Amino acid sequence: MYQRLGAGEDTLASVYAWLGRTYRRQGSHENAESSYKQSLAHYQNMEKEIDSAFVLIQLADLAFDQALAEQGRAYLKQSEDLVNGAHGTTHSLARVRRELADQYLWQRNFAKAEELHLLGLQDFVVLGNKREIAWSLQALGDTYLQRGDHDKAEEQYHHALRYFTELGILHGRGYALDHLAMIKLKREKPAEARQLFVEALELFRASGLKDAVGYLLFNLGDAEQAAGKWNEAVRRYQESLRIWEELGNTDRILLTKQRREEVLRKVKDTNKEG
Image (cartoon, rainbow, N blue to C red; front, side, top):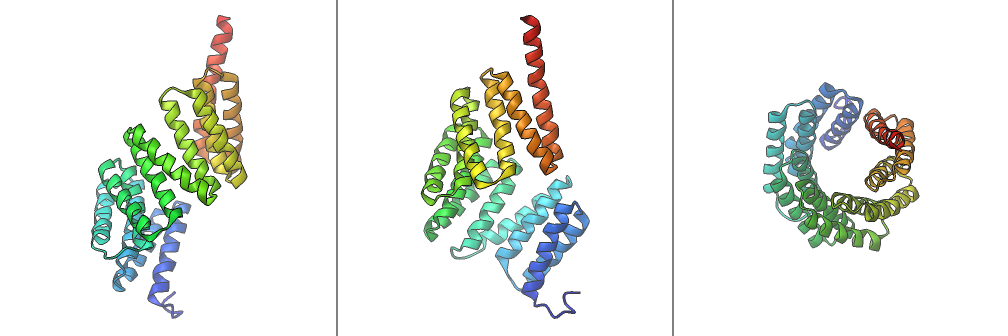
């Protein structure tokens, strides 16, 4: 259809990529895959390696979502080969490196994720893009956090926080503080975690990010529970649940209800003992 309208190949590639994302959000995997493949074909015809690498990442993510791990890994390898063969330092290349690193992180390939995040961060430093440096530091911190290296994660989050604060990026500050609070919880310091969660919560509220507020309320409930403040924990989970119900996020609704019920059972058992 688009060809009949006389659309150029670059436009076609972008349109099919957009369609792929739209179908993916609708849960139509077959249509999403078809659209992404058409987008990829156009980018390949134009020899646009970085754009091709990005679409391959989307195809990989789609394959993993359908439990097609081998196919997903093959797409990631193709994408990585294109990225490794690229020349120069550009924002597009650095962003695709970060996207690729995130995919490897979700597959728990920590070594590859770290390597690509460091290369992307290095590119953004060369380009002097402080905003992207901040987000790359945050992503690198996430890599270390999931790997279980809390000291390195904490270091990167503090670096990211300084950039976010300097640039006035409220939700960036919120994410950095939230993840620093998670580390405090893992180190069994619920009071310190609670303080950071509360600060992050206010930043997300000021940013108008309702889903982030929902996450923070849930995390704050975990901190209250860890501190033995069960009634406060229930209240935070309930506040979080209302947001997930408004947003229609069924997975988070189920998880939050489960966590709330766990704490309510503890309160009930304690009252019986008393």
